[in-house]
Amino acid sequence: MGLSTLDITIVLVYLAGIFILAQVVSREKGGREKSAQDYFLASRSLPWWAIGASLIAANISAEQIIGMSGSGYALGLAIASYEWMAALTLLIVGKWFLPIFLRNQITTMPQFLEERYGNRIRTLMAVFWLALYVFVNLTSILWLGSIAIAQVAGIDQTLALVLLGIFALAYQLYGGLKAVALTDIVQVCLLVLGGLMVTGITLSRIGDGSIVGGFTTLLQTHPGKFEMILKPDNPFYKDLPGLAVLFGGLWIANLSYWGFNQYIIQRALAAKDIPEAQKGIVFAAFLKLLIPVIVVLPGIAAVMLAPDLKRPDEAYPTMLRMLPSGVLGLVFAALIAAIVASLASKINSVATIFTLDFYAKRAPQASEQKLVRVGRITAIVAIIIAVLTARPLLGGFDQGFQYIQEFTGFFTPGIVVIFFLGMFWKRANEAGALTAAIGSFVLSLVFKFALPDMPFMNRIGLVFLVSLALSVVVSLMTKASGDRDRIQTRDVVYATRPSFNIASIAIIAVLVALYATFW
Image (cartoon, rainbow, N blue to C red):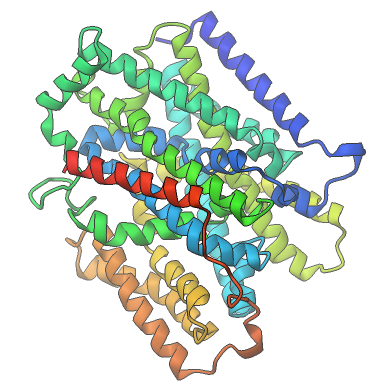
């Protein structure tokens, strides 16, 4: 089933509307040209609602919707731990990490590394992040997004992939981060509304018109799909190894992603002050609690509605094709909204890192307008590379989400060690940081081949502990950073407002209830 005329009209109206809105909200007053801070950090003026919505819009895209729904089809609700544990991680980032970053006026994560350790670690990690964003994140969003668009709209997947890349590029090319962040509240509202409609309609089909009845039937028919903590005899235990989800390597993956990932943390760095950033963080944490309902549940429902899928990642597109005309157009627009918002965020972050961490360092006399122009050129090059490499890199994987986690797991332990020691241990130095960065990759390779049966999440935890120990030892055996350490932490205030504390307690209570219910 393709799109009806009504569905196509809804999608085209959305595309035109969001494009126009992005250009309008990012226009500078008085016709002045954009500075680098305007383009890359939205003039450091983002309100809390834009920060929270943009955090989710940057995060939830094809690899989440299509990939996590596919993982829900394959292994069940347990994959929701990535979302629910992320809510708790966001609270940690808001209370302990953001005050340090904002106090020191950090614009990029490589900049923090240089001011804390030195130039070599900045260059190494900047190269890593650029490669990760282009060859893993951009390619995965384009590939999985094109699968959904091709299956629902009935068009060629390669054409869908190219059109996605062109629209996401054009959408943010003029306005930069401001164009992305200030329109993301619309994108997230559409994503949540569309996602809830998919969940409601699929469950009602199972329950003969009753959403509650459909959920009850699904729970009774496939109870194994609702186990949050997988047992060792579960065929997917290697993907989510039991209690390690709560107390092991998932923490490392989440801290790296939400705390030290440029295209995520860039939104909070653009806040006008710390309290506003923290309110945005809490808003995002509440939204994370909702994401499995709109992403994972349709995948589990597909086990009953479409039990013979060739690939798990076909689950969500198949559920979309069951929707009535009009509703399909709205939900399809929501899916495109998620894909475009996340693509635009990553494109902007690639441009930010390349321009500020490479070009500006080598051309210190470059004008603000020149930096913005370099950023736009970088964005164009990044999306061209991603379009060309998406199929070769991801065409052979059944579960795109798990592929992303496996690949990034080679590097996340070292990233967490470097930043954690850099923020909270003054004796850490560049030699120790380089040891952690290189050691994380080498150790991950060694453990992967030496211990092939070890779940990758356990491997992440083990590599983190070994890398941490090596970094501490090397730091103590070598000269301290001295004047190279320009990060100020003595006057950082970690106290948070009562509203943040109350909201945090509420989020923790919901998490306890969820895990107690679906243990």
